Image 1 (cartoon, rainbow, N blue to C red):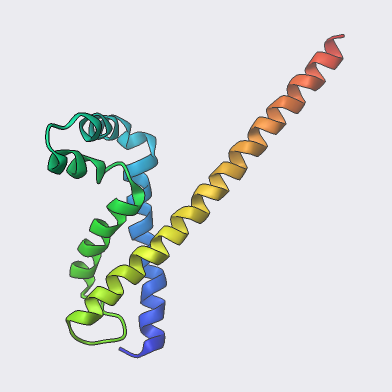
Image 2 (image 1 turned 30 degrees about the vertical axis):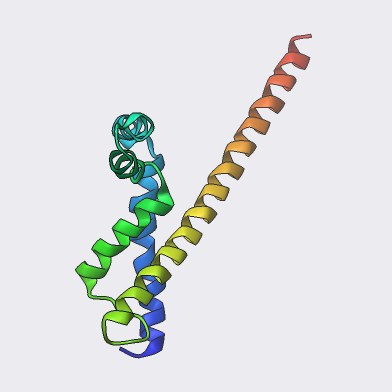
Length: 131
């Protein structure tokens, strides 16, 4: 695979990695299992148990494991055609996926801020019109 194809794969393969990592660690559909993992990460009897449960609460940590799955699934290697290509690909995919998640988090934060500001303006206008 030539380098331009590898780069395209890098940026495209990071999309499902970031989607899965973000969804499991942030979205409402996984809230109950995540809360259970947070509780066990804080109260586990051994460090191994605490770290194993923490994995499902941190998007950066979880993205490493999702990346491993996608590298095995797609047989993606970056730059080198041997085992070193897998390692380079793994860390590169985690890096790009976490950039995507950071940008998504900032976008959601900006949207939430706008909604709050709009609600505040509407409340003020309603209060003025009722006076």
